Image (cartoon, rainbow, N blue to C red; front, side, top):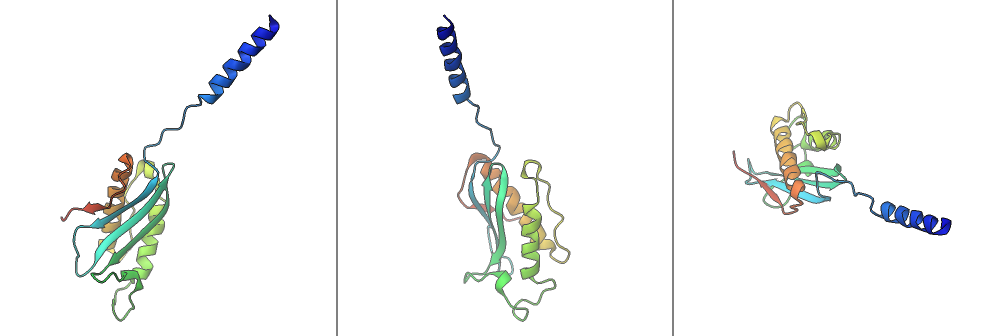
Length: 144
């Protein structure tokens, strides 16, 4: 009888341990992207975010012109802005990487880059909405 009880106990242990509940996540793992609907002063904002286990793994934020050139790759002569986009785009990426996406609150942004700060927050929020359903198609930020 002891053997039957021991075998039954082991069988129950195996069944229960194999039925471990998977963690539930708010966001689906994946690579997500969003972009502005239109070019604004010759540039279109875009963002790419990789999400895994309810955390952002990478954030890329920049602007492209109609020829595919990146705003962060422009020279000071071509794009005379202070601070230059090669400074504030990575700074916004860093701020967004530090955000707890489970309780997303817009980042403060970068002084002197108000439009870019606003664009990055809007694109990030749009991506988070898409990630709730796992929609990895490029999201388009509506024109305001």
